[in-house]
Image (cartoon, rainbow, N blue to C red; front, side, top):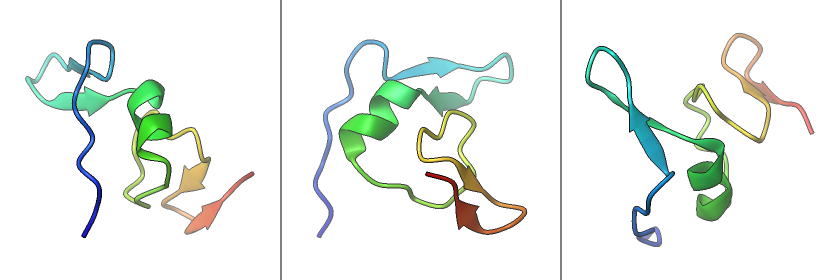
Length: 54
């Protein structure tokens, strides 16, 4: 079971379309890459090449 991370101020923002976009701050708190190609991925994951740049 995955650990539940409480959402705090600065963890996300709303896009003009109304979607929640998680920030680098949230991803670092989570502690791992989900490999979904997130906009602010601090782990350097590329969906095109399916690799993580360190």
